[in-house]
Each structure stands twice: as structure tokens, then as C-alpha cells.
Length: 181
Image 1 (cartoon, rainbow, N blue to C red):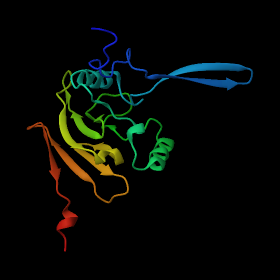
Image 2 (cartoon, rainbow, N blue to C red; image 1 turned 90 degrees about the horizontal axis):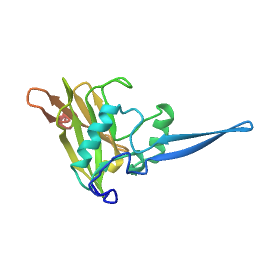
Image 3 (cartoon, rainbow, N blue to C red; image 1 turned 180 degrees about the vertical axis):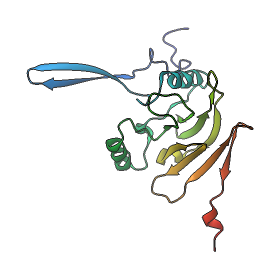
């Protein structure tokens, strides 16, 4: 593959400018640290490689990051202060560093796609597209057991999708409060 052709290389760490350098001054010494950006720090190596492979197959799409979030920057900052590594577009049911089902958002221009990756015996199953919309630029994802919640900031609406393993699909659960008089 031509190393100058970045259009087909997706999220490959070796070709993307995903490293930033921070210099920390301590007394008269300085320490330079390289930190990775672009992938949430809470993603495991297997989750990262799974998303990289998918991005290689989806030209033009990339992993959405907190920088893509335009809805409520103060809320994102507050969430990051209370939970380092918070990313509105990555969620998992697993404890930090453990493998488990996860969901991410990919973005191309102003369109977001939410993809769910079920856990299988040997890694992750094929991704399932849960939602595709431009308004996700102002939302965040949360995965609780078998329910994926997509919630826009500054809204009382939460879209709950329940995973059914037997059909390998999600079902949107209607908001029962709307049926009340």
C-alpha cells in the first residue's frame, strides 16, 4: 500500500497524527511524555484494533472524539473532570481494561453512526448499526447491561435500544411517559 494514500488507511496509528507531546516541568527537571489522542484511553487494545479494522473498511469514516461534540462543551469538561478518560462516543459494560460489549460513534462530515460490538467467544462479533443522525453531535452514549442509551444534551429525551442476543439486533423501546395523559 502506498504510504502517501491515507484515504484507505482509516485509523492506523502508524499513519495518523495521534501523538501529542506534553512537557512537565518539575523543579529544574523536565519530563516529556507522549500521549495518544484519537482513541479513548479506556479502550482496550482489542477494542481499538476492532475499530481500526472497521475504519479500514469504511473510507471517510473515523472514530468520533470529544472534539466532535458541539452540544455542551462545559458538560463534556465537567464529565471529564469527574471521570478522566470520559468520551461521549465510547461506552462499554466492562470494567476499565477488561473486555466486554462496547459501542462507538463514527463520524463523516456531519453524520454520526452509532455501532455496537457484541462480545463473542473469540473477540468481537460483527458491528451492528444502531443509529445514524447528525444530531449525535450534541449527544452521548451509555451502555447499561443490554441497553444502549443515546441521550442528547439539553434534552429530556433518551433513546433506549435493547439488545437481543438471539436475533443479534437492537429494538428501540418506546418512551412510556409519552403515552400517559
